[in-house]
Amino acid sequence: MLPFAPADRTAFAFISGAYCIKHVTAGWERQGCLALRRAVFCDEQAIFESDDGDALDDTALPIAAIACVAGMPEQVVGTVRIHQAEPGLWWGSRLAVHRDCRGAAWLGTQLIQHAVGTARARGCTRFLAQVQVQNLRLFERLQWQSLQAIRVQGRPHVLMQANLAHCPPQVEDELRLAVQARAAA
Image (tube, rainbow, N blue to C red; front, side, top):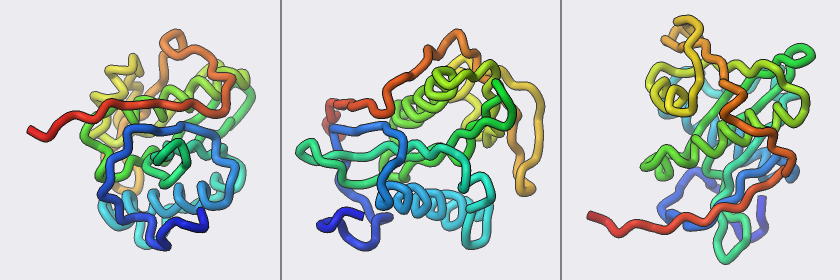
């Protein structure tokens, strides 16, 4: 965690105009991803009781969306993790975006594209994810294909496959994005 950052990273009212999407390298980034996942999957959605961590956390590559202030990373506001299950077969999981940053699907889209692109650059020939039903339209807009309805943790999900032709390999570990703020209506 950054020395100037507040201890409770889940409180977030400021909407940044600058973000970076990056492979997690620092301890505070990893902690921010885990805290965001707990806030979304445990506190908001009650899919897990107190922690959504599992054995994949030991080997998966976490990717973070980080809000920046004056060019400096400030807070993790989105996350996803990817792992290779077998040669060529990659999975994405635990996609989460901070509640205050869900107004537009672009942040989730950037995380998904960075995840698939990173896997492609590492030899992915097939990329799968278990997608919550409420996120189905986002993935369909990104040209993902529904394979079958499934249940995960007792909740309806859809097993989906990325159309790799719509996501080029991503060789950079980090992307910087600037978003123009819109005036409140």
